[in-house]
Image (cartoon, rainbow, N blue to C red; front, side, top):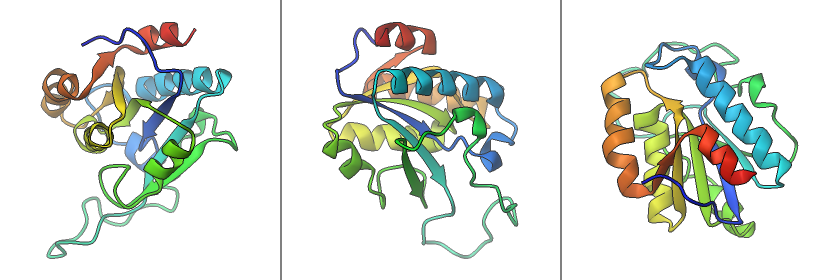
Length: 183
């Protein structure tokens, strides 16, 4: 369902736009996802609405039979991309699993600010973004996904999330339409 309005207390949640993830091959160019996310972040900040920058630094404990994918990571792998223009007032969430809620302070940070709706962007659509969207829905937030500001390494997984999963969790919309709702 397309977005028709944004709650007065909406936050932007940018998932895993960090050097080690944005440098991977994706179904849609990561540079476009970064640019659209940065445009949304700038607009949210201009309206004094929270911007949450999520990054992943490892994996959750669990099965340990095999090595983590990708081998040894470079020192700057978890650094947020500079194009996001990080501000001091941005909320930074560091996670160890796919979704941004479990094992973090995200829900507490949002509730302290009276947030009722989340706009989501990021990489990977079917992993970090979808896991965060599902948890946000379960926590009672209104969920909107900026469908042209998300991508995945797997095009089929991306399409499944955008076409089948996200519409069941909330609203889907383009960056341009969300920016117009903010104006």
